[in-house]
Image 1 (cartoon, one colour):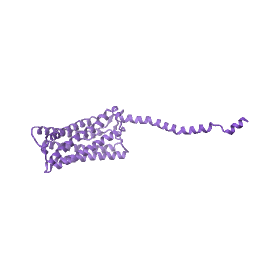
Image 2 (cartoon, one colour):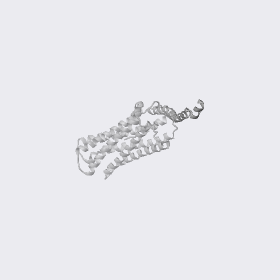
Image 3 (spheres, one colour):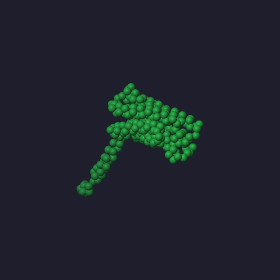
Image 4 (cartoon, one colour):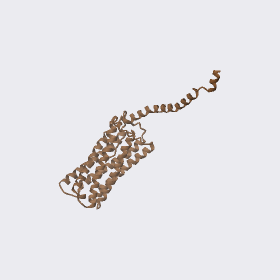
Length: 295
């Protein structure tokens, strides 16, 4: 469920002002989705728990959008050339793998909540579907925890303590929040395995409480992510040195190597018609000059 907390500046999918605007929107949308998560779990204690499930579905949908944005932003930096991922392990295992894993986990969690919502609203029971829904509630947080671990495995050439504090203030709440979601889903599965429940009774109090605390941690991580994005936009770039030898650097070298050849080829093509016309006009001898020469 967490979003990618990458400090490496490889998001080059537009002008700087446009990029900064989308980064602020991305961070703000994720924080708003975590607020919806807290409200969705809190609504489970109200008289209308179905409304809480609706809030959870809305929050999960927004988080999917946020992670897809992270994925597309990093792929745009390498012109969507997937072959370059082999030259940059961190780009493949962090910037690419984390949004994919998080999106997949969020989608599974979304389907689990959706199955429970439809069964509770329509009022009929289906044991197989409800069992799969409980299993999906476990699979989603498991992928979130895996993505959170990958999210923490980032290496930088050089970064000062301020940048590292900002980065860890985002990674640690994301990691702990994902862990609480997984523990709550496992406790819920253990409780449901010994009893036969249907509808909203498949969601135990442990699942709700741990989900609420996990959402609060994600909210803290989202708030710190907004602070990190703001601080990173204000920095001059000297506090964070980009990784050398990565996919983006290889792409830039390839572009710099091809540009002179393109310019030279364009000049050659532009000059070739002029040379052809001069050769055809100078080579022929006028007919009058031939007659004079023979006389």
